[in-house]
Image (cartoon, rainbow, N blue to C red; front, top):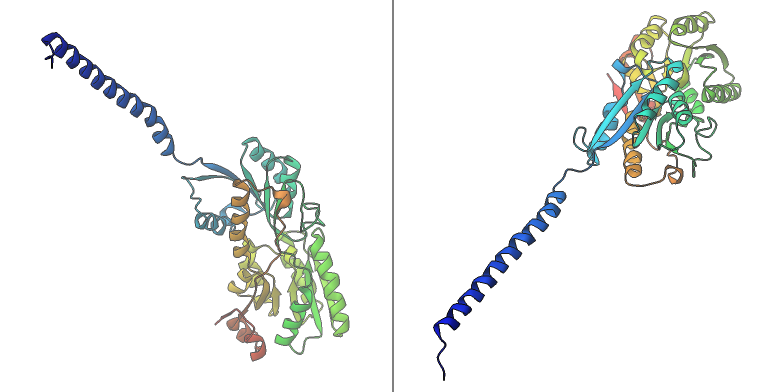
Length: 344
């Protein structure tokens, strides 16, 4: 066999060196190509923007914390994956259209509208940005949804749907005040559901041979005159319909009913915690938490027109025994046994 010459060995070594250099270059190039893909995979998730339009008083609002908590439970954390723009009308409904237009101009991914006036203002301001509403008495009657099953348009959300609660309010109140013959009702004429509930209460009262004395409440300044109007008619107990009261004024209203020594039924537990006698209605903080689920579904691509409006499924009865004692009332065990919470 013929042995390779020195020149042949040199050529072989050069070919090996060239192949090694090509391998190194290919490795470096491959790493350079792969690096942007890896870097992109490590980029933080897009921060989604949620606008909140509320009829509440900003310094006293109670909707945001349970809503934000619901989002955190679903993996959306403020400052990391979600950002908020909040506007509050402070119970001045005339401010809502301007605030709604301002929020729409910020181009959020979703708008959360708290209260019927806020939802209406948001609907007027945009027909394209998805809107989730909460604390709405009658979405269909208010023109916010075509139907509860298929709301249509760019709005959906949660309704408190308080209709048919009037019967329960009267039954519970006369159970607590068995000698009652004349009941006062405070209501807000501009709230459609208040008008329907008042008619329901009047119908039930006739069957129970009770007299109803009603007084209109148009705003916070009407609480005291309205209460004085029914007290002057010597009513035995009072029902305050949802539209006539707002949670921010719970302490003031509870103090007024206490001063009048008037057993009162409310829609929300805040009034009982402040010193009112009883409340029966949907769990409102739970509703705000559930609103977060609607927002997340829309952020993930759901069409609000196809998301059914949710009605209340969780109601709670709260009784303040301290107030009952101050009013010289003995609450029957049958009613206490139905209570979700008894304040002593």
